[in-house]
Length: 131
Image 1 (cartoon, rainbow, N blue to C red):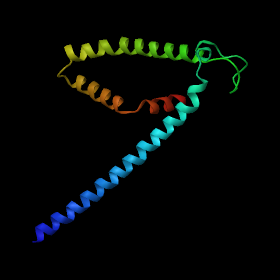
Image 2 (image 1 turned 30 degrees about the vertical axis):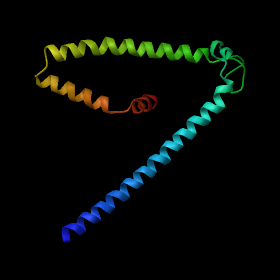
Image 3 (image 1 turned 135 degrees about the vertical axis):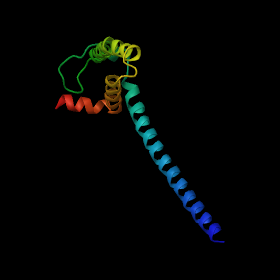
Image 4 (image 1 turned 120 degrees about the vertical axis):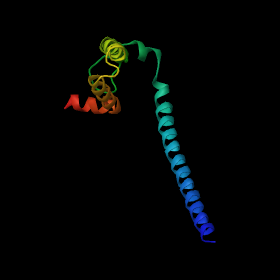
C-alpha cells in the first residue's frame, strides 16, 4: 500500500514537471518565433539588390544611403582567413598527435588542452581579446 502511494506521488510530480517543461518550451519557442517574425517582416522590405551590391555612402551614421557590400566582403575575408589559419595550424597538430603521440603523456596533455579550449564559447574569447 505504501509503495503504491509513493508511486502515485512520484507519478504526479513527474506529470507536473513535464507540464511545466512543455509550458516553458511553448513560451521560449513562441518568443523566438516572435523575434524572427519581427526581424523578417521589418527587414525584408528594405532588402534590395542595390542595398546588397553598393558600398556605404555618406558616413557611418544609420539611415544614410548606400549598401552593405563592404560588410559582406569583410565577413568573407575574415571567414576565409580564419579557416585557412585554422587548417594550417590544426592539420599538422592533429596528424602528429594521431601518428606519433597517441599514447604519450604529452599527447594526453595536448588533448586535454584542446578539449578545454573547444568547451569555451567563442564569445568568451572575443570578449577576452577585446578587453
